[in-house]
Amino acid sequence: MTSVTHKLRTAALLAAIALVPGCGVTISGSPLPGATPVDLDYLRPGPFKNEPTPFGIEWGMEMPKKIRLIETRRMLNYLVHPFDVDPDLHTPGGTRIFADTDAMSSGNGLSEAYLDPVRLNVKFIGGVSTSQSNGSVRTPKDLAIAILQFSTDVEAIRIADEFHRITLDSSPRQTVEISGRPNARASAESERILDSWEPRGKYIIWTRVKLPHPNLDAAIEAAKKSVEMQVESLDRFKPIPLDDVLDTPLDPENIMRRAAVRSDRDSVGISNYEEDFGPFQPSGILHFERHPVEARKKFEESGVDLIGRRASTVYRTRDLASAFRLQTFLAAPGKNDFILKSPHGMADAQCIKLDTADQSREYDALCAIVYDRYVAVVTAEAISGGEVESGLMERAAAQYAILKKCDK
Image 1 (cartoon, rainbow, N blue to C red):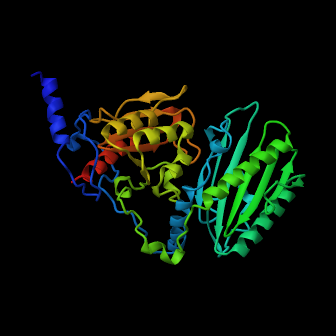
Image 2 (tube, rainbow, N blue to C red):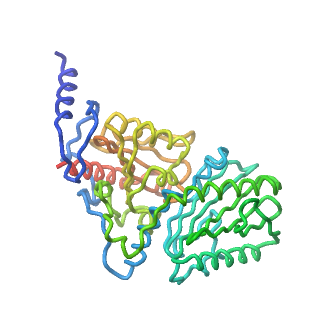
Image 3 (spheres, helix red, strand yellow):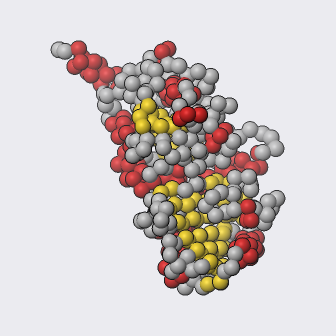
């Protein structure tokens, strides 16, 4: 028997031992050999916390906002993907989850002008927004979609009217009607940009269509399709009354314990906001993916059924083989990206430096690591000159330690 064969058989035997993880989930599937052994004593996590940390809400002045964010994050799982409306829209813009105006404004259209009706509005619960484009500079096409939730139907109608008025005042526009959507407050600018605000119960559905050339009929049809798809999806969302939110487990399957917590050394996009910290369904996390169309297929192929997002993002797949396939996709370099060396002691880790920074978290470097059926992605910003700081490698080491310690 060769030494290689012996190692593989030993790995297979060890993997076949049934384990009940310390983070509360029994691992199922068919364990397979293939992962290179990692000795935690040789990892270099630096100052980053490398122990599993429970996910909860800290009591304080921000607690009402954090409770509303729990409900709002659930809503992201029901926000329509622009590429489902128009297959040309494959390039992601920014995605926002917000329970106040601090995180509401973004480049996808919810600009400063729309903040005042929501600022200090006690009937506002939260909102989610996203946008995607065709990635073209010469003939740009873009679709932005948002859902805003209020405590009453009357308030949703009032704010929809106010947003419509703000839109009309923002530039020379004409009001338009959307066939089959009598409640839509819609207006068009130069027949290539159309905004629609439609109240739906306690919600407002916002759609902004941007076309490369003036074509009002096409803009109206795109808005109509977007709103109808969003209405169908939103009708499946079952809101939880805010008074009952804390009676529902925040991390019932302990996926959040496997994700790294925030550190003072994290990049701006992570350290400034915690709005996107929480468990997500695959449909929700797709809004943050670099290649959302392909990511949906990979999620289905690898059996991704739950994601935990904190300073890092942890995906639960079907088994180890699926985890490696997903890792390869998540860390695949683009045309102008380049591969980074793996962290010390972690031969299976895959790291890349991105040519273009992420629209939501602003990072431009990442490492994807695998432990059992889990894939974790850690991120960082490059320092001046394009050099990637050691913090990315240290964060990857800390994240691996967290995943492994969850099985103790």
